[in-house]
Amino acid sequence: AQKITQTQPGMFVQEKEAVTLDCTYDTSDQSYGLFWYKQPSSGEMIFLIYQGSYDEQNATEGRYSLNFQKARKSANLVISASQLGDSAMYFCAMREGFGYNQGGKLIFGQGTELSVKP
Amino acid sequence: KAGVTQTPRYLIKTRGQQVTLSCSPISGHRSVSWYQQTPGQGLQFLFEYFSETQRNKGNFPGRFSGRQFSNSRSEMNVSTLELGDSALYLCASSLEGAGYGYTFGSGTRLTVV
Image (cartoon, rainbow over the protein chains, first blue to last red):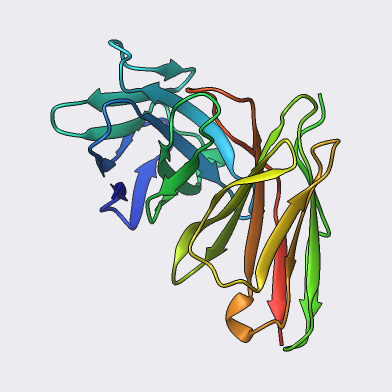
């Protein structure tokens, strides 16, 4: 069965510094997708970044980048130049079911609560 | 472009009652999924609907059900509510195909007393 592990329940970072949130995954599938979501206290899950298993380059979206190491089955999120508004829960997720018309579901990790200090 | 809309935002129900939650996906998205989020269990997949058909189902009792309408709007129903059903219920919509992410709504926070 697919599994996502986030080993950091909470993290602190100084404003304007970079921070790495860890994520390891377990799957026997060759094709899969990895996602990071941000969940502020309001509850909404905000999509940050996506990495496909066959993508050769690490994904980047603005201040977010995904450090994808396929052999180690890790997909760490790097946030550069942290801002106070980055304080939130961050979830790593993997899409189970990847073919067209197969549907799919997300398997989530337990999350990392990030606090950005001024 | 409107996002995923969930109603109501907050709900308080009594044990034994039933509840219906609504989700309107992004226009053009035909896949709608539901997730339950609790402090103890985290985020768990409930079910997914596509073109009015349930395509995937998570490991939840039969008290949890859902449906999707022809306009892709979806509802989920929980009958005979239990205290443990108190949770944030999140709906997500997606385009079909590998690599497409899921856009989530703001959720419905259900409290069972």
